[in-house]
Image 1 (tube, rainbow, N blue to C red):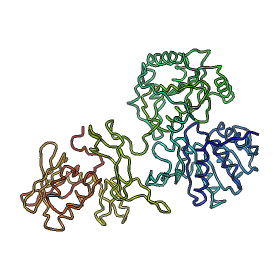
Image 2 (cartoon, one colour):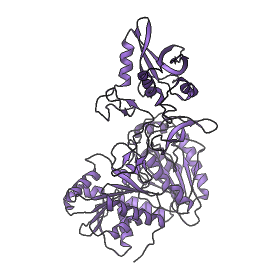
Image 3 (cartoon, rainbow, N blue to C red):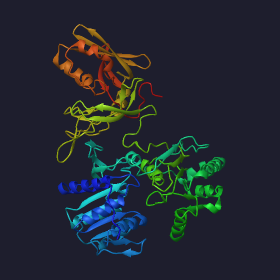
Image 4 (cartoon, one colour):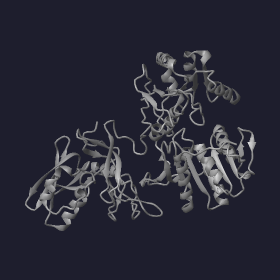
Length: 578
């Protein structure tokens, strides 16, 4: 019997799980980088369990690996996996493939207390998915069923974060997610700094590179194989040059994993590499042959291993010290999984060289999840919430001194201390309901407060443009002119056209409207203010936001401003946009 002493962070992850499930049945996530020893955490939790639990994984390699760690404690666990030719359910702990369980739900009629899901970023929100079917059935047998997920990449393309609340007090998503809480997270940098993982050396300037920028990806982040092949066929010299550079760089490396774009591409790459030292694995490779090739690679009989989408998870070859990415993806999760194949420790291994020939350009330490980067000039900026003082991190732009010029945050990300958790309701950008004046997200179609429909700004603009007595301008800026007790606002069009309106600060109703329109949005919602005097407005006029569109209607011989559309998102072009 082998016994393992858990590392401090592994023990912390176990304790976080016990503490969470003692007070809640909400599904939870543990985030540990590839190579952090998730199977040891799973084994320890299984060892501590007193009732039946089910450990799920999506590939037989992970099922076998997780079961082996548990058995190393001298405990007996069952395996339920067609790929491993075992179907055992009588043990207290069962390690199973999700495919085998979902196809044989009748075999799982016992009452389970806990489901542990390895690589849980694969869990979708669809009710008919394999994971959700299993969870539903076991919940029917036990209403107190707990669900725990482990992953290195807690996000999915098209969904963003797979959980809502982070234990640091951050609300990641306003809408429901497959998991409720992230109860423990260990950064990749921590693992590298403390010598638990090999540092990656990212090289951005290969001798040649594919240009996949014109291809359109599906919702899963994948590209059409036929379109990718058409592009690759037209650039055979690029592939040949890339392979030549890989071979040259690999002279000082022990093992190289190459991730090709398509099956045809993988065969082409294989043809340019030394045949005697190269193995090729695709989805069409028979399982027995695949296992033989993988074992030969691990025994260093092959130096190069070319594959297509089959070795991104559940593959462990610590001596890999070079990764070549020749495939495009829009999935941060997939990219991190690929790089993770080369970060495990091995004797005499100082780093892992990562060559990205597909121009994916992801940051493996700080992945862009949720709101995409608005443009290449945007950087993360810290924005404090005026309501709860939480330090949000949004995309934004800064000047040469690092001062925030603009940010793109919508709502405060803070998770307020309550049970159940509640997200701070302060919004930096918002649409106001015309019925109850409630503030809503700028993309909302119905008011979250009263349920009434919110006017679609595109419909607003379309209707105004049809009217003969209406004028619509794309507002590029505003200026202010005091006129006694009144403040005149001039809205400037990008072509020089102007619309004007004024507010009488001696009239409480007009002052209230001005503050709702402009004071509430001062410095993009960072410093909301209730103005009382013209002098106050003029002293900080440069911090006042201007609307994106202004609509005016004829009133006698004059134009009267009727609508101001702030924080516009839609089909019409805004001022100074190409």
